[in-house]
Image (cartoon, rainbow over all chains, first blue to last red; front, side, top):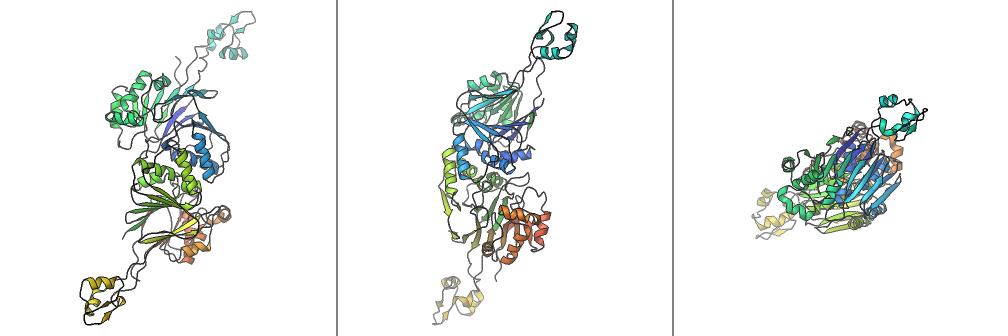
Length: 308
Length: 308
């Protein structure tokens, strides 16, 4: 089952000719889950071929303009295109005031239900049938959350030949076994699910830090992530500036990826001063080899992990 | 003296992959005069090579989101880049509330004086040494202004050979004559300015309608304009829809250009339904031959008119 990450905007603070402001999409089974919504997110969606009428949720990391100023235009365009599906926007306290202020001072009509879900504490902020989204406090200059999307465990692999061997007739009993139940055969013997089904299989885990300094809570959130998308505004030489402004360097991002045992690291929120990714890439690669610097419209497909 | 018009955004209502939201620059002697500020105006400025620290003014036609949602990001980026020069934003009532709402609900600090000048009536809204800006009511679904930039008359051409012929010695007396004064020669005879200086010469005139139906006040505003930039959201077949939504068709824009005796017409605010400019262009050209459909990053240079 396909899951892709699409980087719509990879700049930090101010846009450049090459990088739009922060906005990252997880596209999963036809749903769009957008993390941060910097100015131009709607046009980047268009350029990436993403429709405005899909099932969609938005998660805002913090209330700095470069992460939220794409929301009003996106909402307006959705309305102009007659969206009717509900949209939920999650984010820190202050998000509701911002959206209300826009609704009061800009002339447009909403055509769909818009729900603002302000996050006050760490933990699970969104529970879906097939995944959960967790928020953890980031270490920035203002209240900020990092997010992880974690797919639920999938049932283990079913072995039909084992079921046949044990004399279980094909049909409803197979289904019960597949879903974890034990069954009783006509001869009175009991067959347990684990006799014909392998161990549960893990889903995928994607973590996005938003803007953050190094923090133990991010290491915790990113534990065994398949993909860690990390703030990397400044290079190692500017570590002091990163500390001051609440951002990370390549070495700090790599440290988090390594300690968390993440499988892959992507650096984003890149300062306009870096015209090429080389410096940031090489500084991170010293400590964590599977690293890339994001660029706008980069796509990553994450296959389902194999049976463990 | 150079004057250029740069189309940063030429879409109507919603952006497309080819067109950003409304924003048009008049670049004059190092000053940037921006008309409307749709989302992404800041990034379009970057791509057009326009700096954020220049002398600048902004004129907003009306308070619909597609014409104003680029303001917050532009102001924020200017601050992040430490702009110190004052910025004045002109526009209809409601502009001040919008900017205040953004300042209250989005976290950023202004590094420069920002003045909001709400326009209540038609007439001259901005007087500079070398030009004036006029506002006239447009005919839209909400309060909306069209603007014209009109350069002041320049002194007529000075003819040194005539001055010599009349016995005026080169120097301070020439300068007085050039600036309109009469002078007295040592022999007692009077020389008047008009004897050695040609008639005053007109400056340039550029008119931008913003969103509007056909309206006599626009014809008046556009009288003898060197360039008329006109709403053309829909083609002639959709005239009814244009009327309903407060927009114009190519034939209506051409009618205004013709009645106003404008020298050149550019159609903008193009609906996403038109993938090529051909239909709009040909419908307008039937009535006004010097017409083009705007596209993003199109530049037009307007030379100073010759002596008349």
